[in-house]
Length: 220
Image (cartoon, rainbow, N blue to C red; front, side, top):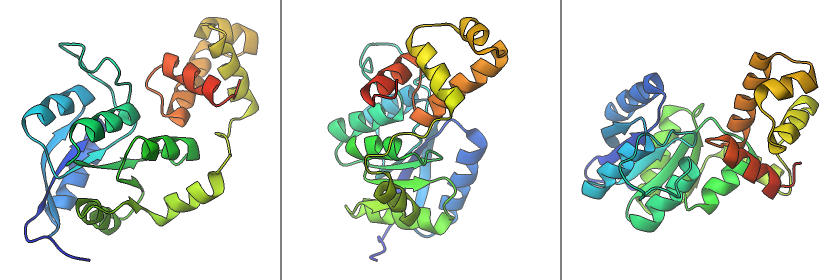
C-alpha cells in the first residue's frame, strides 16, 4: 500500500469523549495520519466543514445533532443522513464509519449513503490506520468481520426478541412509556431501557426515525 508523503488530515465526529480522545492519540502516534479536530455533535462538524475540510472524516453513526442556528440541516437525522450530506456537499472528504453497530441493516444504509469505509470500534488500531489510508487513496474499505455480516445479512431483518417486538409495535402505535409499561406489565424504567436499546439497534436518533425504519422494513 502506498504511504502518503505527509500525514493524512483526519477529523473525528464521536460524542463518546474518552473513546475519541484515545482514538486521536493512537492516530497521532502513527506515521499515517493526524487528528486536527474532534466534534461531539453533527452541527459542530457541519459548521467546521464549511470553512475547513479534512482528508478523512471518522464518523460515528449514533451522533446527536446538537443546537442549530438555521434550517440547513433540517433533513439531517443522525450519522447516516450526515454521511449523505457530507458526500453530496464535500465530495473530496472521505467518510469512514467507525461505530459499534454491527447490524446488517445499519451497515447497508450507511454504505448506501455513500460511506467510503466501515470499521467497528472493536477493530485493532492498525486496521483503522489501514482503512484511513485506503479511503484516502480513493478505495473502499470494509473490514473482514463487517463483510462477513454483509454476506450473511442479505434479506435478513434486524433480530428482535419477543419483548422488543411487542414494545416496538406499541411504540409504533403511539403509546408512551408509562402506557407500554402497563400493557407489558413492566416498570416504566424498563420500558425506557428497551426503547433506548431499540434506538441503538436501528441506529435511530429519535422515536420518529425508529418508527419510520420499522415500518419501512416491515417489522411491525
